[in-house]
Length: 93
Image 1 (cartoon, helix red, strand yellow):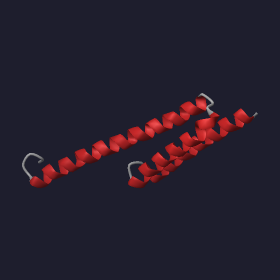
Image 2: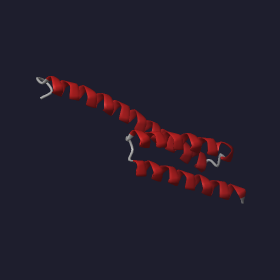
Image 3: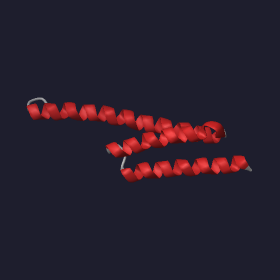
Image 4: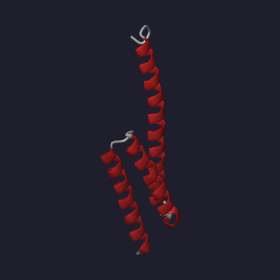
């Protein structure tokens, strides 16, 4: 189909562009999540809030664009926030 029909060729080009964009955003989200998890594991309390803020912003953008489902994005942010909260409470003791 994609070899002969103009519409098929166009759809193929569009899907390849979208796939590349989606893969980039998903990789960025994964990197942000890893950064927060690493900060929690290393007990870097001084930078943990700004890392969480950056990660939640990245995840929210991915959810708004439809790359992640909005509830999946919300769940990821909530789990990261809970982990950060636990780490800050443990450090305060």
